[in-house]
Amino acid sequence: MIKPKRLYKGDTIATISLSWGGAGDIPHRYQQGVRQLIQEFDLEVVPTKHSLRSADWIYKNPEARANDLMEALLDPNIKAIISNVGGEDSVRTLPYVDFNVIRENPKIFIGFSDTTVTHFCFYKAGVTSFYGTSLLTGFAENQGMFPYQVADIKDSLFNEKPRGLIKPNTDGWSSERLEWFVESNNAIKRKRTPCSGWRWLQGKGKVTGPLLGGCIEVFEFIRETKAGVTPEEWAGKIMFMETSEEKMSPDQLRWILRNYAACGIFNRIKALLIGRPYDNKYAEEYDREILKVIRDEEGLEDLIIVSGMDFGHTDPTLSLPLGINAEVDADLKSFSIIENACVE
Image 1 (cartoon, rainbow, N blue to C red):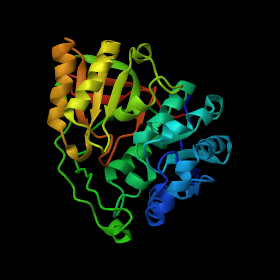
Image 2: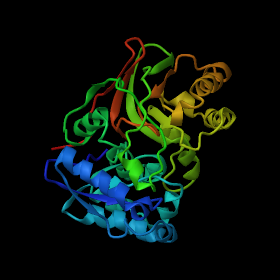
Image 3: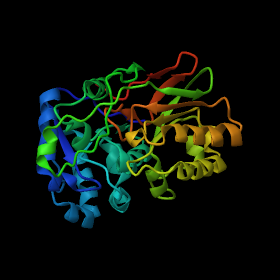
């Protein structure tokens, strides 16, 4: 994988709307994210050309969204690109995304949820990107960013060395929905739920392999597109996945997992990492369905599976670098990123 250059204080980063145009319709939320990003990391922040247009305009202009990404990559003054938020139709940008531009201009790119589409574009182009928080969520967290999130960004994006051992968050998490359009809500601290740790569902021993994954629903969006990956491309990977705020039913998850099993994906991967679901809804039910398909139906009782991890649609989140080697040790119950994701 081609690795982007790490960030330094004073660098200029660009914010981008690749899916939903919420940043343009909720300027107070956007500015809160920008302000906290500057305060915590001492960076210069600029919006891409169209990223603050209205949500309706963003929806109607997928080519402009893709062009914003291409222009930010080609701009030598921009050192990193942060997704404003997810959505549901980044897939409409695919006809206008040039993998050669990504490959020839590697830069830090971070986001989650529907941004999975763009992450897989980077992966197919051979460039590392970070499945992590976005501007309107983690960076704009009410009453300041989570300390775990701040530490994660510093360790991930401002560092040219391997992160090493990643410990679970212990300070509480939140997915409480306080309507962003109500400006006064942005000053209210969200309720925190105590952390119960990651759940090691099965497996033994230690495995290593490149990280690859994202949002389960979006895997379905990009199937058979130029951003999609074949079952063979999952071979040797540590697969990570999480569900969106739509809170798919356990039945729906089972159906999708059976499809992956039928494709031979679970026979090929080294380990499976599952993010904490939104509101932690269906957490136990999801665990049962995962074990039902992988252990009981496929007989893969030695595949290491860890669930309830700190990534996805709850805050704070880990930043997981696609294509970078990680280590999962079921005996020690440890997860480490053993390869550097950025360069000097």
